[in-house]
Image (tube, rainbow, N blue to C red; front, side):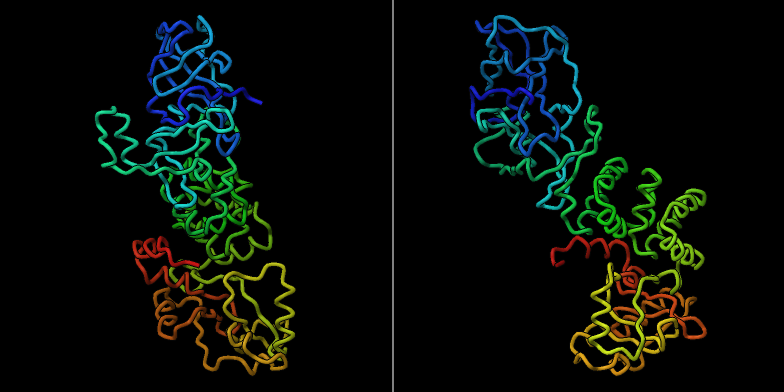
Length: 426
């Protein structure tokens, strides 16, 4: 276990109050100034300070915790009469609070947003000096200008527990392994996408690398296709293909359409064959048509089944399509001839012995693959539909346009982003 600075001095203070303060020997003689503090990156929810970088005679030397007698906002006092002049060399996994974290972007998990570390709060916890919180307020900046700048509590401060923020391994030169970003992975995909949207490509790729395939896919689907393509282009090809496998086929096709032809073809070759077939088919359609909007993941069932039989089949599905708005009826299992549509609400409210064809909604609209996307969206708005089947000239179902994709045609980009940021999502 890494040695830590023991608590002897002020129980709580800010990093800015300690930086550039004097380092004194045991007799009180000044031998340098505090340049930075060292922690083990990602080692704990509140990592211990495991060393001090001291500026001495225009050199940076490492101060071992065993040499420290006291740390306070007035500076550092040594337990020895002299300073070990061993040059500071960053070890694997170590982070410097000033160099790597102060003034950097962090992810506020509870607030579901990016914040800037204007100052860092240090405190004695279990006998060790630890990093406990981040000050993201304007007061954190003003404090660094000197004590005379702040007067009382005229400027409020905002502290975020260090356990509730996540930093980026890409900001720390000696961190080779990606961070887990476990807190981020628990957020709604829209929130993850909103955060990624504010990051650099490098940081966005780090976030995607840290997420499970399904979570990463859900987040990528919430991004604009050109932005998603830029992120996936920088990932390892196998990893990018795994994420595409988990995406809705129409979303995966939209992203691949934004990539160079050679790279898109390579990723298609690396995808699971069953997933790639649907995506390849969608890529043959113009983007601004019904076929370009549709997903090929939907559920067909024989029209003569009872409600009980249909529900049993639904429960047996390993991965039902998401979202699932309706069942699409066919005469026999092998057929794709659309004979009716049963909204999920009708299915749930019906008696167990009722046949599916008795529940089919009469006059349910359909569209052809070449129908312009705006006409598709207009039809869905006019009939208040959550889903709209796409059928060929023989009436065989090819896919389904869902309301989320239709909304992207109607609403401008700015309005979609505004809706995505609103707090009324479940």
